[in-house]
Image (cartoon, rainbow, N blue to C red; front, top):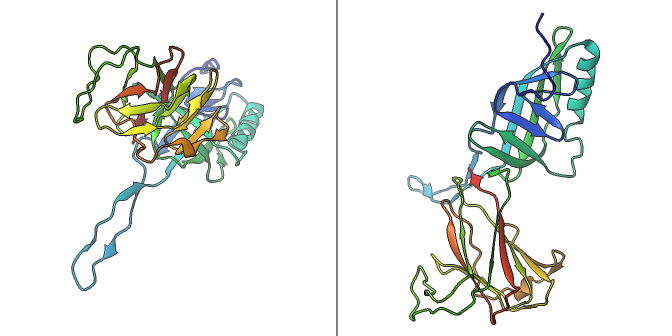
Length: 291
């Protein structure tokens, strides 16, 4: 007779965890959840390509392609130590992601990295009884954002530069602010394979802050005065600018501004303002991204 494995035992990798359920592990009742087939996680998301045929000519007019939502299907076998544990396991599976109003993280622990996607249930969970202590299962979830992100939220912070340094005109990129400036710089790394969109937080006191991509010259410039304790939150993915995370200040974004991502490999950032204040801070928050 095979000894029952301890709760929390990892059976194999990857481990799939969502809404209190974990595949390829042993749960608190001693039920072994074996994921024997996975579709949609390890592969890239589908591609949408809309081409218009060229009238009376071969071929079509070119158009950009876009990624479809990521659909992930997990199939496997649950092995329970007894009949009662089996029935409770089926009930728990049926409750996974039963609140369709919200996205929840699917966290996937792989041998080389732990990543996640925000998902919701997109098909009925299926159960098929086998022998007394086992049943086969299938769960399908969909991530509206097709990218896979690092489970770890990465952060970096810098103050304003303590002196102006110097910039030579006419400007050329990448920018060099000179050796005289300290602070006001961030080097952000993206260890994934796809561009990711960071969230910026500017803490006051700060007047007319500017976030500059020093390699390209793209910038996010704001005409706003932040008092001590106020924080401007800039979500570059959602394209929102919120004071204290609540009140929209999108109108403070100056017309020359351009939204820019954190590309594969990383970017260098400069933080500037109309005047120096030692308490002002720029904070970047991001997750590495994979296609």
